[in-house]
Amino acid sequence: MSHDRGSAVEAPAGGAGGAPGPVSGTGATAWGGIDRAAAGLHPAYFALVMATGIVSLAASVQGFAAIARGLFWLNLVFFGALWALTFVRIVRHRARVIADLKDHNRSVGFFTAVPGTCVLGSQALLIEGATGFAWVLWIVGAVLWLLLTYTIFTTLTVKAIKPALADGLNGGWLVSIVATQSVSVLAAQLAGTGGGREGLLFVALTMWLGGAMLYVWIISLIFYRYTFFPFKPSDLAPPYWINMGAMAISTLAGATLLLAGKESPLIRDLFPFIKGATLLFWATATWWIPMLIILGVWRHVVKKFPLRYDPLYWGAVFPLGMYSVATARMIGAGGQAGAMDLPFLNVVPPAFFYVAAGAWTLALIGLLHRLFTGQPKPHH
Image (tube, helix red, strand yellow):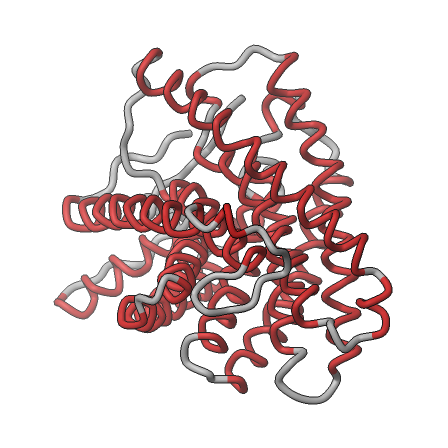
């Protein structure tokens, strides 16, 4: 299975929407660097915002308020910078954007913009109390979800030439579930802030259910690909951690619904079902963790596949932080009420917070090293 990971910066394509014309001077040099960064921006780079946001929220749950706030403001910088590069890419490198949308491996990376936006909204709401800003981000995230879901899946459905299953399917496809559940989580969180409570809870519920069904469809194909097709170390790209992360955020969405819907007649009637499904999602996420660790050891230790910075590693950081936050929300931690009474799991959220924080730090070091030492040539 081929994975065109891309790098943070690739050489821009020539011709229309390609490389800029001749430049000179400091300002022109800076613009050339921005243009090159935009040209080679991987569609999945909003996973940087997802990872930073969830580590921030996990830090908040564990009582590290200063770290949580610092990461929120840093995430605003990441979010703004990535949108700026995205707009430059759309304007000047439209052919690359269209090519990515038609690519089975890269197109699903665009979904990271949705959870990136909604996780930032959760940060704004829970860490800064910025309800208005959180509402804006939820609306943007919901609109992005609608546009990307039906654009990407329609494009991949009707394209004439398609890759084989082993070449076109990877864990990154599950970002579509993460996107769906992120809209559900923020909707449920906002339901307690003002009017439209029942409507928001209904949206959160239907998105949660739809995301769960989408996971069943996609993970069945991924598991089939795992076990019935040849598997090389290069096939085990970082997005396979989203196998777990998609279930972790589904757990968070279910727990948030249970806590936010105590006064809702619809949610109260469904309490046993939501509670059982939430525990099922948590158990599934937990099942994936040892499997992914074993496969990681096989990849890097047994097969000696080199471990180097890749923008897709942010998609591996996010599930670790999400597992911490989801478990904390499910059982109650950080002085907050839990959806279930499971005190013997209290050790899980802090343990995974430290793992996620360590992984985030290593990924950031890799990113900074890449930025200051230059980019490798892209793989085609």
